[in-house]
Length: 107
Image (cartoon, rainbow, N blue to C red; front, side):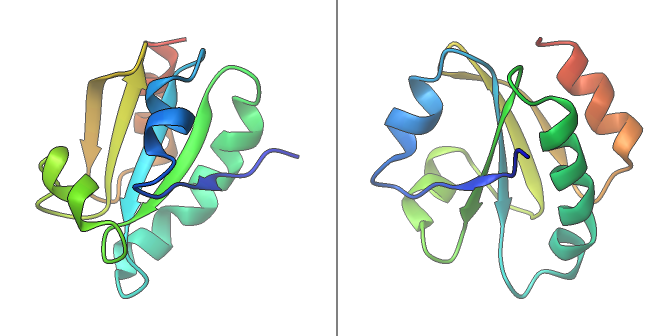
């Protein structure tokens, strides 16, 4: 059973930028209601895309340098990385179908 992994500033490069499969990074915070709303959807997608897409979570409060680096101004913000580079993003609490469309475009 695949679940999103927690990523920090210290292991972001290794886990995300050097990944051999696409990675969707969920920039979130514990106090963010919409972030909590989409969490079950991201858990489902992590299972459905197991082996094709890695799902990662970055707590913006604990990792402010990553938030600055990727211009996170509003959360939840999900950034899709392919070959170590951001290729797409989803801002806000959107439905599962929207996530699926974006992910299917990179796998």
